[in-house]
Image 1 (cartoon, rainbow, N blue to C red):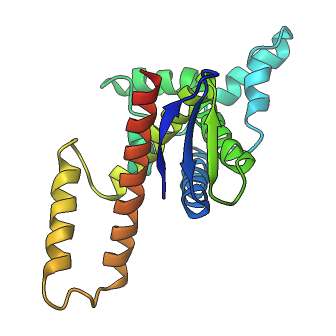
Image 2 (spheres, rainbow, N blue to C red):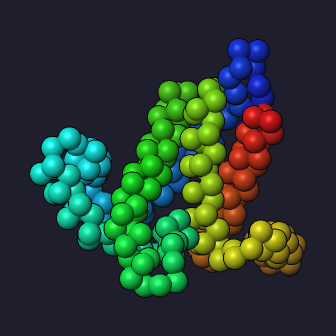
Length: 210
């Protein structure tokens, strides 16, 4: 069972997670990263383009600029939430995507990879997950991105929507015969449980940082 984050004497932040909780968080982080890459058409080595854009070689910078012109507009509803249009003007929004979407996506993917690395370093069993200040901010950003994806899958549009979804779920559990559920209902329950876990962890980490 997860234990809340706390500030340790050395300034680091730590919480305790069991093996299943770590595996679930790592899995949804990986699935979020895969979703971003697939929907935006980003290759695993997309960082090469970023390094080319920062190169002192003008030819490499030009190559990166032309590659960036093909920035793909998100088609998945969750990815649209992660990468919203910067303007209502279609042409201006496309220009913003060309100039900044790749860099923003690489940042989100790096955060998700870091979360998976931290969890992997903590081991597969019940143990402490320890973060320094920098990693804490990375984890907060990554948890927020994963929660955005899960919120989209639960069709949550506003903060209060989750309370309504949770209430309806609890009512359904009390209805006579509710033990017999279809696969879709069971799947929704799992997403709700993961969303609750990530929300609780994010709030716990924010409190520890404060």
